[in-house]
Each structure stands twice: as structure tokens, then as C-alpha cells.
Amino acid sequence: MKTVLPPSCPMESLLRVITGPWTIYILWVLSEQGPQRFGAIKRLVPGISTRVLTERLRMLEHSGVVWREQAMTIPPAVTYGLTERGAELRGVLDKLGAIARRWEAEGAFAKASPAAE
Amino acid sequence: MKTVLPPSCPMESLLRVITGPWTIYILWVLSEQGPQRFGAIKRLVPGISTRVLTERLRMLEHSGVVWREQAMTIPPAVTYGLTERGAELRGVLDKLGAIARRWEAEGAFAKASPAAE
DNA sequence: CGGCATCCTACGAGATACTG
DNA sequence: CAGTATCTCGTAGGATGCCG
Image (cartoon, rainbow over the protein chains, first blue to last red):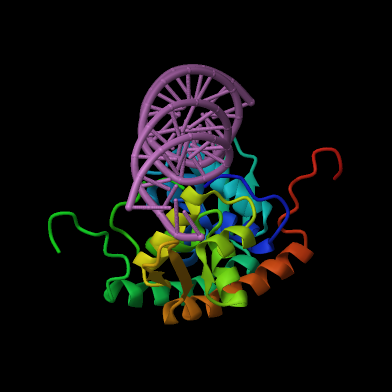
């Protein structure tokens, strides 16, 4: 997604937060599996790169959706989890998910299969 | 937004639909101002290019969120409006918007003012 | 008026290697 | 283990010009 819109709408900001390609998966993992360590999240969200995972977690942390707990031990152990905001978000996302499932069943996202159809 | 995730989650698809930079503004316009013609939307969403507007409208139409009515007159007149799905979506988006406003008031999206803080 | 086709650019993100 | 730094590349998107 580009960065085009200056001041307008708080929804823009929110959508930006939850919209990155992997974001909802991260939230889903933290929501279903509970707080996880960095490496665990990385394993639970297969295919994501450390760079992006870090970036996403930072953004989520910055907007107060996840918390971050760093143990300053020598192999560092960092744990992430959902905050209240994260939980709040989850409620709406669940609703969105319900709609998404229904629409999908209705073929709303049929990708215009080139050959078939 | 990138195209990374293959089959997983219908939410991905939905988020893809509502997530493009201008999409929610388009939906907002159609929701608040009622059905509009192409040029009107373009005027009501300042800064959007025809390319992107067309693209977004196509996507929204394809997933059944907006309808499209084309009058085959000589200066063609094309009108777009929200479908039932669009209205349905609006309900959830309103909830999301409410959250967004509250979070913003709480400073969730404070862009890390480089100097301040 | 509506909307393609084209060109061009810039950011987002993958991969890899390195550090505390 | 948990990141950061760097490089590259793909693609979404802005601008423009043309056509029905």
C-alpha cells in the first residue's frame, strides 16, 4: 500500500495497522495461541521474514495492539502478546471474518479463473 | 499491498478489497452521498487518479460491493452505488471507524513526532 | 464523459549476512 | 535468540495522452 493520504481519516491509520500482508496472521496467532516469543511467531507464520515480522510487531506495538516483554538475558527472550486494544480489535476482525467467509461462499472473491468458469 | 499469501484466509481477500489506499473513501462517498457518477466520485475523492479509481471500482464491483450502471449514450454516463454487501460492509467499517477515532484520541497513531516526545 | 494504454517512479518486502 | 543492515526486485500507483 502506498502512502498517499495526509491527514484525513483515523480509519486510514487503523487500516494501515491491520492491513499489512501478514498482520492479521500475527494477530491471529497471538490471539489463538496466546503470547509468543519472536521465533515462535516466525514459525507460526510460515514464510514471513524477520525484517517484516519485526516491522509489523513494531507497528502493532507502537499503536498499542501488542505488548512486548524483553528479558535482558544473554540469549535474549522477547515475548509478544495482545493488549486490550488487540482484543478489542479481534472482536471486529471476527465480524469481518464472518462476512468474509460468507462472501467467499457466495463467490465474491472468485478470482475470475481464466480457463474455468 | 503485496500479493504474497496464496490460499489461506478469506479475510485476506476481504481486506484486500477494502484496503487499497482510496477504497474506504470511495465507499464513504457512495455511502454518504449516495450513488454517483464516475466524474463525481473523482471530484469527491480529491487526488485519486482515473486509473486507480477505475481499478478500485472494478474490484469493488467484482466482489459485489458496488453496482455499476452504464448508460450507453454518446457522452457515456456511468453511475456507481453501494450494493447490499456494500451496506453490510459499512456496518462493520463504522464499528472500525469508531475504534479508530477513539484510538486516535488516545494517541495510538501518534507518528512518533521525531523532535517531540 | 468514462476509462484504457503507456511510461515511470517509489516504496514494500524477500533474501541474506552480520551483531549484541 | 532477536533483531538490524544492505541489496535487490516486483508491483502498486501517479501522470499523461488517446479513444469510443
